[in-house]
Image 1 (cartoon, rainbow, N blue to C red):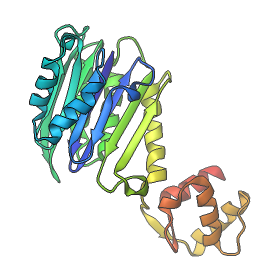
Image 2 (cartoon, rainbow, N blue to C red):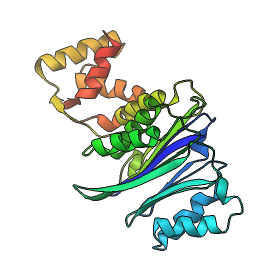
Image 3 (spheres, one colour):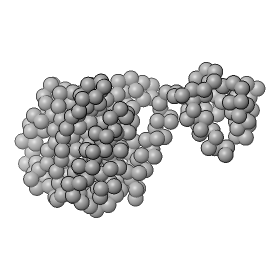
Image 4 (tube, rainbow, N blue to C red):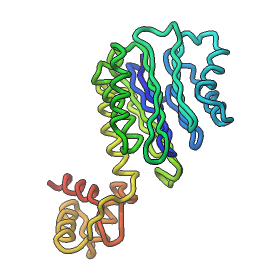
Length: 278
């Protein structure tokens, strides 16, 4: 009752998942920096996540890790798993999973090394779901991993997705030095209950970029730009003598601190200010 993709790109590992299942992000995905990523679904055995990652951390290949963990499970015929590491990728679909069920794996050479992925789903409208996910992921070369994962999820959803409908979705990505406080959690987003969960997840990912990414396309806070920013900030009630001080006060309230630059303004922050004062 779920479709997911696990992938490794450069030093990043991640998982995206969607399902007609509440809070699916609490059950299916897990990542570990420097090790890999895993998804467990179809009568999911949550313990698989730590078990598989522990084996990957020991240097076991994803294929062998899935084989070892499922071999000891009496309910393996109902399980579905996907895993990636720096060394490989693998997917497992038990013979008893409900139709349509299956998966694909692949890799492609990109800047930064070999990108690897495993895609799997069960109770889908058909094989086209995982094939469209694969097509979208491969077409996203050069894009940040989180966006490639969500784009693959959206492609699977557009192809029919879960045969029962939509409810939950999630994306998690770990990247060294990324995210808040540079702790390595680049993205960790969940949509627990929404009639258009994959689309809502994509919206949250855009917000995640706005709040937790560094400054991009900075323009000098001077001349016409400074005048415009000062005018728009006054509209919102921020009227400090120096425009940069007013901008910092507003950005602190709106949680845009990670995009502040001395003497300049990030274009996404500027656009957000324009949207709020249009």
